[in-house]
Image (cartoon, rainbow, N blue to C red; front, side):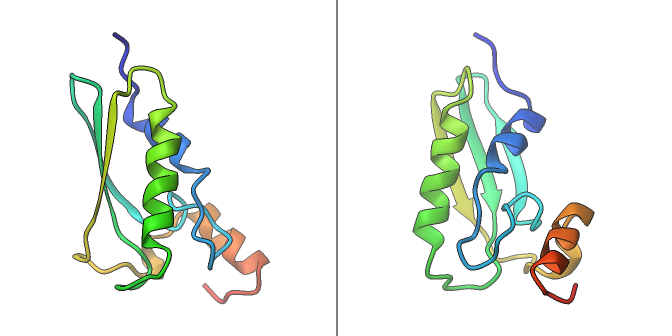
Length: 106
């Protein structure tokens, strides 16, 4: 069985967007960690821009669906953590550029 790489998982997650912010979760810096186990399970540790974000379940479902499409993936687990807290400093340069295009000051 061929397992995906961390880069492939992160690339797959780029289709997942926070509906309140028009940037994907990878470029927003919300994905803190990816672990790919030999049995095809992928554990993703991520955060959201704020605790109690009303779209948490939607983002989890979208992330699970996006990664489950990769070859070799049998199960996806998304865990939300709040430490360290998210801040604009976690964004990629591409994410910051996208935010500026939408009028955000980052």
